[in-house]
Length: 215
Image (cartoon, rainbow, N blue to C red; front, side):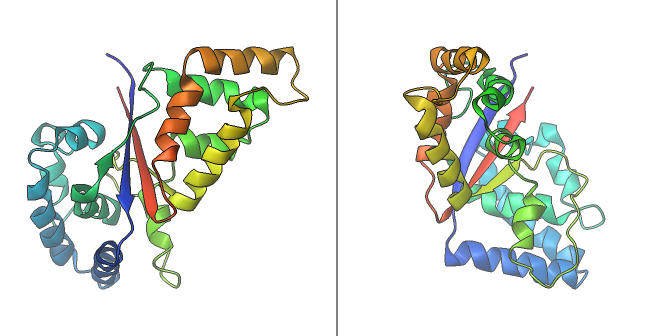
């Protein structure tokens, strides 16, 4: 089966931020029933979103409804389901080749990219890391048990990553050695660089970029 990268953007609106605040308030109050009710109500809006089902295993065959019940629901999955109806699909790292995400992960180090930025570009952060930004004084938010909540990147960071890719898109770094030049040519010829730049170009400062890799 192909390994595919999926990408979406979610615009950060006042409604978005209120949804997060409501979820956090219920979570810290220990009100799992309220969280479950919110998530299940929004889950119904995903019935015809095959792109979201495929990326996050949120369809019935992915057992998401059972993970939304009060006794097992986690904050990360609840937030994903509550926000998912607003996701807009983007071109992905798999747009030209289903292994371009792997090619970026293995070739960008030769071009001087730090490991943490490569990990952000390909995998993103756990959704709980995003939620922490809305709960400055709250207890630590640990990842939940549902594995397929994707990777999340703030819009500002996505723009920064895009600018870094733009710098190497037309020519390899000036100090590049033979290994770096070979990596650059591989990224260009496979369209991995173009796929990544196209994905990031669609994200604004007021968005979140959400990604997922499925097998």
